Amino acid sequence: MQTFAPEFYMQDCALDLSTNSAKPAPLMGEYLAMATKRLQVITEQVSRGESVDKDSHDWMLAQVDFLTDVFGNETLEFEDEVRSNVLQLVLAIANLNEQIRHQSSANAAASA
Image 1 (cartoon, rainbow, N blue to C red):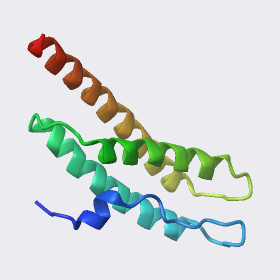
Image 2 (cartoon, rainbow, N blue to C red; image 1 turned 90 degrees about the vertical axis):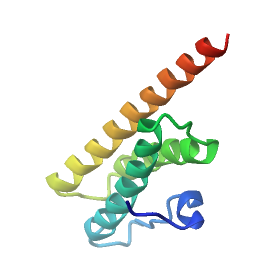
Image 3 (cartoon, rainbow, N blue to C red; image 1 turned 120 degrees about the vertical axis):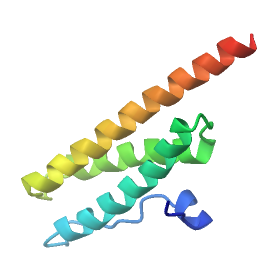
């Protein structure tokens, strides 16, 4: 299993897809690869029954905000493959968020 430095866990989106960028797809591809790896680490934690810390959960929500902003920018154009990968990432975040909520509910019920 690959491990990441603490800075990786704390970092927010640092991707600059300004309107001056003629081809944002390579940057977006790199971002998607990094975000997917980070999400896999969090998913493995949840699969082991570990709770997810606030920073990791905040990171997940920040990715959704970031992606919403990027795709709301009508001046940027992405190929179908990139758009499909973004959809997969957002759905994976949504599914993991739901797992975390269920796990939290189950833990709360067990301690009551």
